[in-house]
View 1 (cartoon, rainbow, N blue to C red):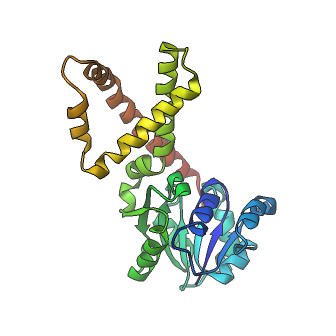
View 2: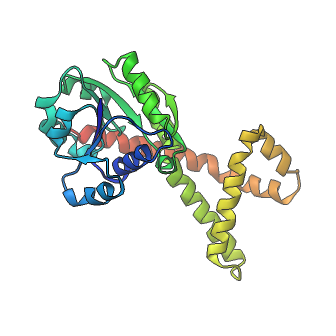
View 3: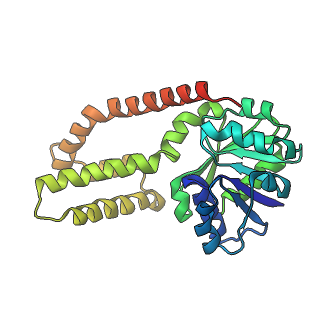
Length: 268
């Protein structure tokens, strides 16, 4: 059963690259489409087995279709493939803005939602999986099998998706911004160490710390081990406690509000 990716922007191309480069190869044919054919050239050059075509051709050839277009382009993409979709298709959207109930009402096929993470570029991180109204156990098993080649899979309901997406999908961006600010602050304090070195020190510390839970040392235990009341780490954590709760609450509020606005604008 062939797999198709309609749209090869940042996330679509990342998924294609991750799956075609996975340690456990995909047996099925993999197709991709893009409104700008030149954007497929690099993918086609890197992966000789990748087949390309127009959206309708993908719908005819592939029974599993990943819809990787921008939310505003969803209606146009669906219009192009609607006549080719059958109850045998599984259509997977990768954006929170497209609600599963509305998507299922607009097409004759089964649906699901997958929220990927840029971490899948290195075949790590978590993929969020949400079943659509008509999705079968076989559909979910198939998506688990695909996604577990490049990530860990965490199944949730759509009502849980905003907070989970803020961690899993937005997380690399949030973490990169946090680390950049950390490196900048350290450079401001000690400018005779080059900025590139500060970035290395920050990210190497993040990488090492991320491995501690794998060694059985949980987050709370890390805090207990590195922070002594009255010490420098303790003082720094006190400063973070004064600002981070409000910052994260605002991050959650603003992303939820932006999603609400975009959902109100979209038409299927």
